[in-house]
Every structure is written in structure tokens, then in C-alpha cells.
Length: 217
Image (tube, rainbow, N blue to C red; front, side, top):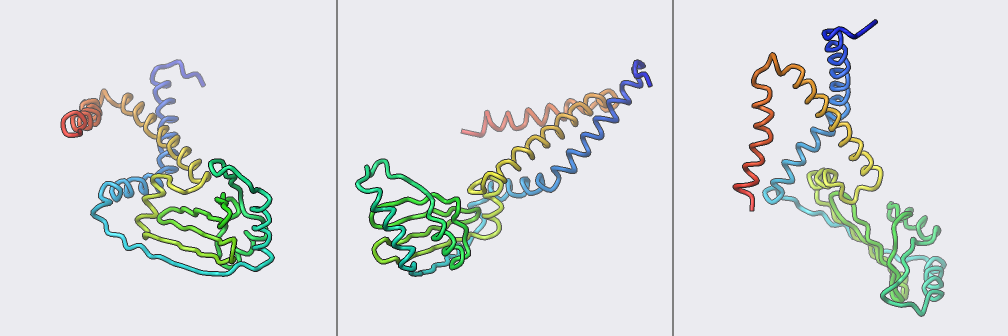
């Protein structure tokens, strides 16, 4: 079917734009609600109380595993303190820690020194760390959680969320861009029948611009 007729062209583009618009809106709906809500909670973070909950555990590493860590440290000395090598723990130590503490440190980089091995374990909505004494094998683990709101806020910021969530945010931003651009074109196509279209769009630009120029320092 030919679409050379202007009305047919308009109908063709309206149909496809509406399709892309509703598909993109459906894809980003839930995430957009999450980001809108957490935008509010982040803006009022000082007014929302959070009660951190701290969990501490103390264990002693088996001698065989401790000896393995000591050998790694001894093999690397002497070292330049400014250029201490950082690496993950051996597989046997990671497996034992996963069994005892129920945490995954397989991809966590450890900070090695002659006295201890330290792992920073940041996470959304909280923090954690693990310290292993190379002299005694004593292991200290501390985890701090700040509640659901803090967790969702960190998802909004992409803080300590990992590469998969970073990819999701990028894809979500792309879908939102498609949603906005198709909406803009639809506004343009309907603007003749809706005289207030462009004044309202302009208000959406001018209002934050005025706020930024006058009240933001």
C-alpha cells in the first residue's frame, strides 16, 4: 500500500510512534516509579531517620588456610608500601568464608599487609568489612545495614550495586529517552489541535531554569 498521501503518512507515523511510545512506557514504568520515589527520599534524606543495624562476628581461620595466606605474604616481601599488590583471596579461603559467614568474596580485592588481610565489602544500603590477622588467624567481620529506604536510595545512585545494575540503569535511561522523544514527536503532531501544547512544554523548561538562575547558589 502506498503512503504517498499526506494523511496516510500521518496515520503511518502516528501508528508507529504510538506503538514505540506505549512499549517504552511499559518497559520503564516500574523503574521510573522507583526512581521517582527515591528521588523524593534522596531530596529529604536529612528528614528521614534511619537506624543502622550492626552485625559483628568473630571467627578463627583454620591453621591450614592461615598458613596459605602467610606464605603468600612472605613470598611478596619485601614490598614497596606505596605499591602493595592487591589480589583476591585464595579459592580455599573464599570457600571457607562463604560457608562460615554466608558472604561471597570471590570478586573482592583484598588489601594485604604483613600483619593482616583486609577486605572492604560495600553494599547498597549499608557497608561491611572483613579483617584477618596473619599472626593469630583471628577474623573480624562487621556488617552495617541502614534499612530499605537507604537500600533503594543506593539503587537510585548506582552505589555499590555491581556491573549488572549499571547496565540496567543505562538501558533504562535509553528506554526513557525513547519514551520522551516519541512523546515529543506526538506532541508536535497533535499541537495544531491542542493550542496549549507548546506553552506547557515551554513552562517545563522555563520553570526549572528560573529556579536555577534565581534561587540556586
